[in-house]
Image (cartoon, rainbow, N blue to C red; front, side, top):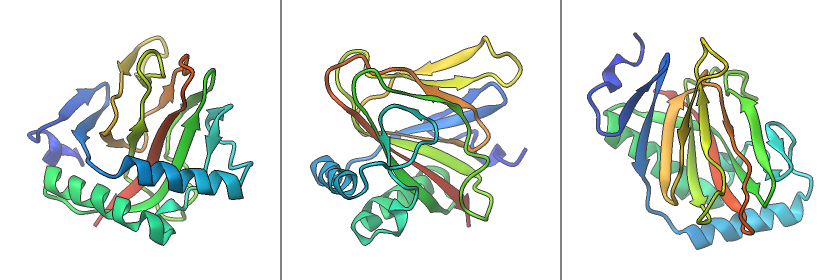
Length: 185
């Protein structure tokens, strides 16, 4: 099993034919939210991939100098958690106002030419109430899913092939996350 080295680490959770690792990442949320807002103002359309309504940036935030500290923090946390090094190859923001969600998808068909082994999500802003749960799907039964209710500062790592979605945000505030893909070094 290619991920067997992860089984004994803190935050590891087996799930169907995969797993997820949950941790906390401390960072300057206000700064990140301001940077995302600037991008939204410049690129008002964003991209339309898994989002049903809402807004997604292009997947190249990891190439922006203003996101380099966040990229490094994600890579360092993965290294500290697993003892292995990862490089974040793609990173994008998801902004979900009331009524919006993300359809079922996986990250195995990334926009990079190289194959990304890991995917993840960092929760920047999570309003109290029903602001959207992350759903991981059982690949052997469409009717079975695992629900993860995120909190601010939660970061999850999972294999890129794990199908997932995000339920609708029913609050009056935006839910903001940063998703990413990465490869082991």
